[in-house]
Image (cartoon, rainbow, N blue to C red; front, side, top):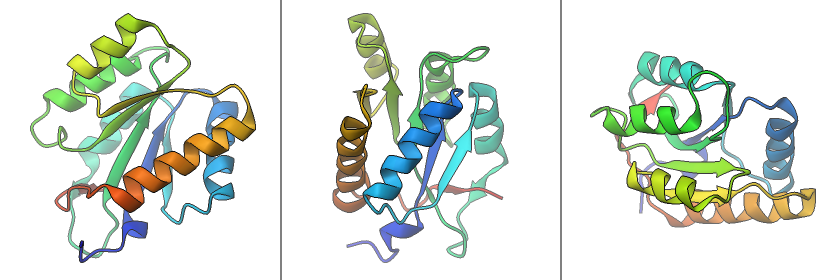
Length: 153
């Protein structure tokens, strides 16, 4: 067991569409996810955020998981995933692709670049709640996440 409560681990959502962000955060609230949620609206914003973050000092919450959209203007999700997984200090952070695309090339490519999971965004809010529950149960209640993660300033 971890000596740190799972509630202290941050969920970072990288999503350029405000409606999609609001839907997933509402779904996480509906399933009572106690974790803090941070939002970055672009690939560049998340890389800047991650590079400003520093090693945990056990007083600040850890970055536990990144939910990453693929289709964003500018630095898209594929480029962002590649940058995260090629960075020796960031690559241990679990990244779950959360996108509308079910294209097999996207799925294969993301796993090849090191994605930890690939989830297609649901089309209904009820399905979004089920996905949020699954993410909560697996990533924050079942899986052990790295303790030596990074924390936002």
